[in-house]
Image (cartoon, rainbow, N blue to C red; front, side, top):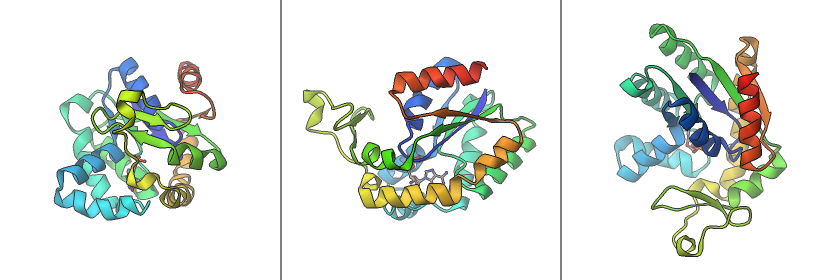
Length: 209
Ligand code: AMP
């Protein structure tokens, strides 16, 4: 299964991806996670990416494309993968096609998780992460347990200002790739405005249909 997850920031892509990869036994390839790991490791690429990420901007295509093309060529991704947060621009979508064509493989499905803009800001600004486990919480919808609450952190790009920038980038850069996949018959969409279990069930239904 070669699958792409698309949706605005805070749509629940990471949560749903973590559930789906278990079911399909494919690696979860999140460009956001890879970039955050590079920032943490202090690599040259991480330093370059950090400025863009903190401001809610997209990291330049040439950086992200090279990273993903290398990653999907690794042995664990040869038979399938779940791309989360990539492609996010038309040049990224085109570059992915080139890489997949060269490898003589094709995408199976592009899953769009839709959530209205007015719900996104609350979802994102309340989001907290446990730096030890990577587990994601929400101050209102899923508060961290008492022993974890003191150490949770907010991502630098989960502030309201950065969130609004990310949302506007989603509409200007990422949403235009949706018709590209729809025309090829690859697109399936689900309403992401529900509890995570409900959204998982909706995804399973569209994937089975
Ligand atoms: P995410 O965890 O998917 O929300 O990504 C966090 C941030 O990483 C984004 O706001 C961008 O700054 C950067 N990023 C992640 N994936 C990409 C991508 N495919 N293209 C450009 N920037 C990306």
